[in-house]
Length: 250
View 1 (tube, rainbow, N blue to C red):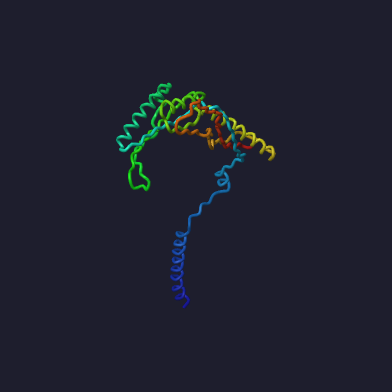
View 2 (cartoon, helix red, strand yellow):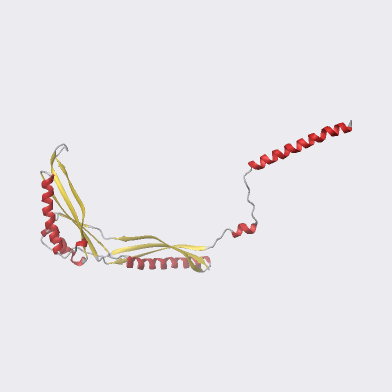
C-alpha cells in the first residue's frame, strides 16, 4: 500500500515541479529589465560643478558714418507703356544727378520697381496706370547729407525720400560693448560670491545673447524741398550687447 502510494506521488511531484518552473520562466520574460549598478558607479556617472550664473549688459554710443538714402519717383499716364516711358525719363534724370554727386556705382541700386493700374472712385474702372521706381544710395559723409537731399529732390526730381543712419563696420563698436558687458557680468558675480561667502573662479561659459544697434529714427520727405538748405541732425546711435557668463566657485 505504501509502495503503491509512493509510486503515484513521485510522478505527481515531478510534474508539479516542472509546471512551476515553466510559470517562473514566463513571468520572468514579462518583467521589465532592471539595471543594477554599484553606488560608486552611479555617483561617478553624474558630474556636478557649482557655479555662479550671471548676465551683463552694455551700450556704446557712436556717431554714424553712413547715411542710407531711399529716393523714389513715379509717373501716372493713360497707358502702362506711357507710364513706363515717362518713368524711364525721370529715372534717368535722377540717376544722372545722383552720380554727379560722386556716388559710386556700387553705392547705388534699385530696391523697388512697380507698374499697375489706377482705378477710378468705385474701383470698377481703370483711370490710368502708375509706374514707380525706388533707388537706394549709400552716402559716406553724413555731415553733408542735407545738401545731398536737396540736390536729389530739387534737381533730380525725387518725390519720395527716406533716410536712415548706421555704421559701415559695426564690429569694433560691438566688440567694445561686448567687453563692457562681460565686465558687468563679472562685477555681478563678485557681488553674488561675496554675499554667499565664496570666491569667483574661472569662466566656464560665455554666451552672446543679443547684439542690437538702435538707429536714430528715419526721416521722410515728400514733394519738393524748400529753397533753404535741409538740416539733418545726425546725433549718435546705440550699440547694445547682452551676454551670459557662468563662473566656477573657487
